Image (cartoon, each protein chain N blue to C red):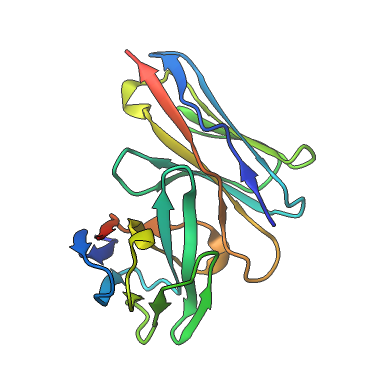
Length: 112
Length: 113
């Protein structure tokens, strides 16, 4: 059973701080990794994808991948109240038709 | 505008009354999928389709049916809904299965009494 684990939170950070969201996965041969943001009552929206070890930056967001440790993280710099949402980590297993595996999400609350 | 459209967005029904939730995408995506989302359980895949006339079960297919007669449409059918199918349902699509880059519909909140 391929698993993706996230701390459910809530993770509370003050406005302007760095929010760090973490995710571990069980399938060592997984190839691609994604972060989705879901506002309350809304649908998930893809915000970051990462395919190789290291960091990938997009605006205030940085995704970090460490395949040896089976660990992927999302950093949000200069956190804003509008970043308050649930963040879902998703992992694309290597094998055949196995679908994308989602974590249960971490709820982030940015306090003004 | 690129989008995935689901209907209805909200529905209250009674046990045993067949219903269909429609899903349509305008991006010419090959891959389409249905998820349900429940508190504490996260997103769980119900069925998916790699292309026209190709469908397969996800993690929680019991009580559901799907069809993919056209590339753009992927309806979810509940033949005899039960209260445990009360949930928030999302349809999603991507160019191919392997991209992992899913576009989600706005969701359909279903209540079965």
